[in-house]
Length: 147
Image 1: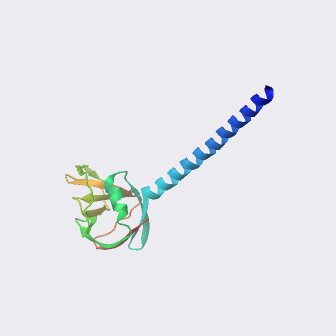
Image 2: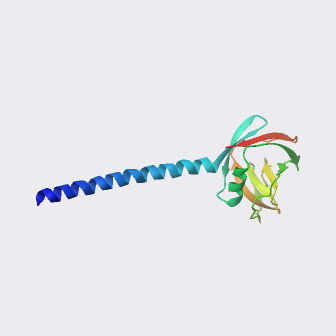
Image 3: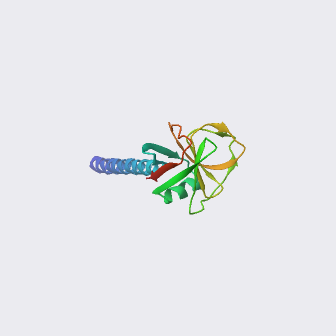
């Protein structure tokens, strides 16, 4: 009787050990794939940055367009913009405050990178944010965005 109990306990513990190992690997894969989707790289006039993407349909559709190599035009001394060849899903709202580094969609096809902070009455859909973005000046810029 003790022998059967011992074997049963051994098999049960082995099962738990194998199941636990499989769960850890599944979680790691989820975290790894999530980080790949949430961050993309951007090269602006040869300066490299990363864009921390929002968790929304617009950002997901934007990633599907990558890689992009575009020339963005200057507007208002605080932003660069580019009209995409494709409309993206949008859910615009008046965000009231733009922060330098915000990457937004205006309408459903205009990509905007803001390099200065200011208050606004316009509506945008947020795609992501570039940390530590420097002032991009009043000229057009060459931009590459890739995974």
